[in-house]
Length: 342
Image 1 (cartoon, rainbow, N blue to C red):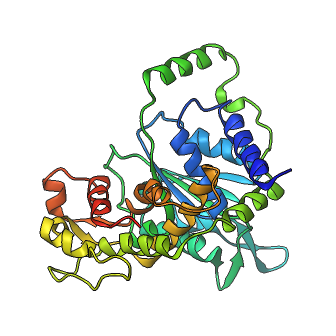
Image 2 (spheres, rainbow, N blue to C red; image 1 turned 180 degrees about the horizontal axis):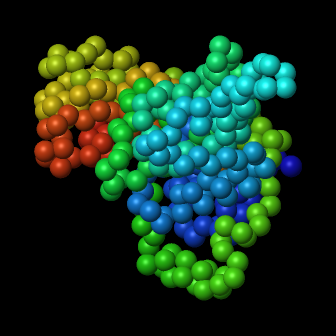
């Protein structure tokens, strides 16, 4: 079978299988698949009832990965996440009791409800793919993914996620309300399953290790022109304010995006810009976006398509942006207009 056809067949099988539980939400489903192929973590943000938890559980079912759900609460301790040392009376020694983080796919539900100590423990797991219990460091299973959810409308009893942790998430997906047609389908789906809930619909594992490696190899083979790489770096660089002093332009981009942003006064809305980790994420996700479109090369439209989910949690807005009613997506969209398209 042709590689392109094989990739398309695998992706179609994944979407078809997930649609047996989830109606619509194509952006969320493609975002989950993107993170799985890229080997990155995802932050899902949306009001309750939009199938965030169900989507993560369904992803685990179609991959056959070991899945653990951790409900984050203000009284959660790092040991509840990573595990702890337990004294064994019979052997007069300590033994390790591993926590729920020792799984392939972790659902960190309402992640912003946990205090700083728990966030620090999770940060080590996300970045180093290991945890430290006592004086010993233990590797986590491979692959290892964290899919975290947070509720944007409840702030009592929550903690703001540290920027260092946010930067470790490959994507931040905003889960939106379904359309009228999709919600009618949801009603009909629920009405047809008065006994068996949607979560109990059995899914077939269609994205096991061999298929996942096929997708990763295909994404790695997608060609990225040097001008596209420069375009990606230009977008990340344009998000970094340095007072009113424009930076030196990147070769091939004489328009100087930073200079335009200064003239437009856009930097008064940005406290901190995206790190080089954002450039790497844009590069990886652009390749996968091209793969989804059935192309063997990355276009500027692929980069722009993934710019919002890659950058929206990496750009820190100023108080002035909040006062003017601007969110990260609005600021990033304006930045994209300043960067010349190759």
